[in-house]
Structures are given as structure tokens and as C-alpha cells.
Length: 235
Length: 177
Image (cartoon, rainbow over all chains, first blue to last red; front, side, top):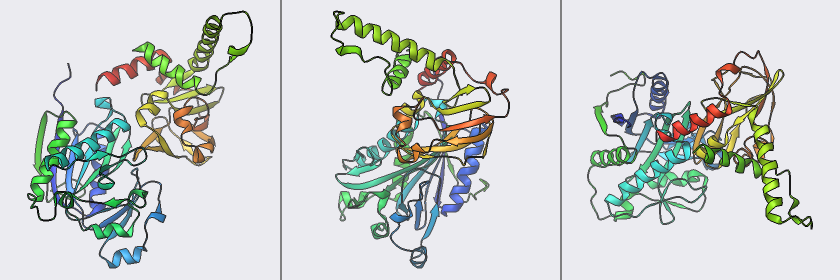
């Protein structure tokens, strides 16, 4: 019989993209060598555009100088997926977990990330669905509400998912989001109606984390306030 | 479970090569006996083809012929990855080390590192994967090979699993889900 599955949740607040990347690299290395258990980072980024391993720069429609002028950064990463935007009022989860320990491959892992966001949306009466083949992510009708981009190294995950609570959707006009043209990006606020008041972001972050731990079968969940953590993992 | 895993490997292999297609010979032999005969020939061929492979616990396979090794990912791996849309290949001439990453595959918005089961020098990469990354899914043991390596020595090989041990390893890993 399998024992309880444990995870530590780091509540991090707003974190610069590069700082979060360096932290993930350290935690991935620590997880590979069993220095830490499964860990989940819950955070937001300042306005940031990112590309995946395939470097699909043609899906960034403005120059890096123009992005800088609008107060955003551009980063190239080793994750899967295409161009995307991260910003305030978008909740990000970066699970650093061992897929081998749970006998799960990339496909099932990503399906579970999709289910996590679909479950959260359903708490607000929003009927979301997983994307069709080639359109990984979470959609409400033909509008994308949640994106996924993952890296798996020796069975350890990094990067993860981004769910739109109420970010400034105008930023998405500067890219072809996820490389899929002619599809709208949406948010939870837009889908429940602009007149409807959502709970605080902190509440929604916690709800998304709870959906994650439920879908992934974690029974031993520890929360840590890490709002002052630096990229080397120290407070 | 072992039978189903073997059957999955056999089905994967059969998608790319069936040695006998004699269903329309017009002979007096009933079709069902001919089909069974062809199946047994194919099964023996697959068994022979796959038995020389060794496996790493990160789900890569290696076929060693003298000082040369061919590396790819297993049918179990491609099934768990989903449809592969991109393969990152190393440079020819670069060194690979047993257990270390030499490239990656992307599927369902996830990049997964591919590790080398052996140490040596990359002498050839499968450039067909640049235009047809899906070969990793449809033909993981043949047309979906990823790199060929000139071995440093053969001291890595005893650390790798034979087919029976790898089958059991996959069963145990899937059961932990």
C-alpha cells in the first residue's frame, strides 16, 4: 500500500522571472538528489514575456526594445510550449515534483495540470475544458484561460501553469499566444462577468493549490510563507 | 501485464514492419492458418530484433554492435510522452555520458530530457527527426532512433537492463501511480 504523498507549498507573492527560474533550477537539483520533497511554488510575475525551447521568436510581434518600453521583460526558457505572457493578476504554479515517484509520464502530468485549472474554474461556475490535440491548455469555448509549459529533467518537473484571474489582456496582443493564431485569451473575471466581484487573489491562489493537491493525490500538505525568499532559496 | 507490455511493443513494431503480407496468395491454405503463421514469424522476428536491446531506467534503449551503439527512447516512454512535436539533437562529434542528458523531446507543451545509456562520442544524429519528430512515436526502435555513439568502452553495459528486467521495471513504475 502506498504511503501518504507529501508536498510543501511555497507562497511567494510577486517574484521576478529570472529569480524564480534560478530558484527552480536549485530546487530541481535538490529534488533530484532527494534533499527536498515535492515542492510547489505559488506566485505571480511582473509583466514578462517568455518563449519555450523551440525559440519561436516569430510569435513575438514586437521588438524586445518595444517590450522594454512597455515595462516588460522577455526571457528564453527550456520549457515546452510557445510564446506566452505572465503578469499581475495571473496565478502561477511551478511544481517541482518527481514524476517517477508517482509512475506518471509527461502526458498524464499535463492532463492533471489542465484538470487543476478546470476544477478551479468550476468553483466559479465557469465551464472550462482541456484543449484539443496541439492546443494544450485550458479553454472556455474558444478562449484560452490557462496555459501550460513544462520542463522534465530526469523525471523532475519545473515551470508549470499560468491561470488568468484578471491580468491586463492587452499584453497578449503583442504575441501569438501559445503559437495559436486567431484565438482569444480570456480571464476568470471576464468569464464570470466584469460586474461580479471575485475574492482576493490570495484566496484564489490557495484554491488553485488545493485543486492541485487534490488532483495529484497529496495527503500531507505543508504551507510555507516564502514571500521574502531569494533565488538561492534562503530567506 | 507483461503480456500486454510485450503486445504493445509488438504492435508498435508491427506498425513499421511486417515481414509477411501473404493474405492474398490465392493458395488453398485457409486464411486464418496463414495469418497465424505470419503472426508467429513476426513475433519471432520482433523477439529477435528487440532481444539485443539494453534499457536504462530513464526509458532509453541502446543497441550495441561492436564499438558502435544506437540510442532511442522506448515504446513505454513514447506512450507516456504523447505526440512528439520536436526533438532537440546534439551536435555530431559531441561527447555523451551515461546517465547525462544529451537532448530533449517536446510533447504536450512539455520538454523531457533524453539521457544517454552509454558514454562515448556522437557520430551520427537522426536528422529525419527534425522534419518528422513523430517517428519517435510510430517507430521508436527503428526509424525513430535518435543518435549513434562510438563507445568509450563497454563498461556501462552491465548497468543496463535486459528486456525481461525492463518489462518488470515498467510494470512496477506504472503500479506506483
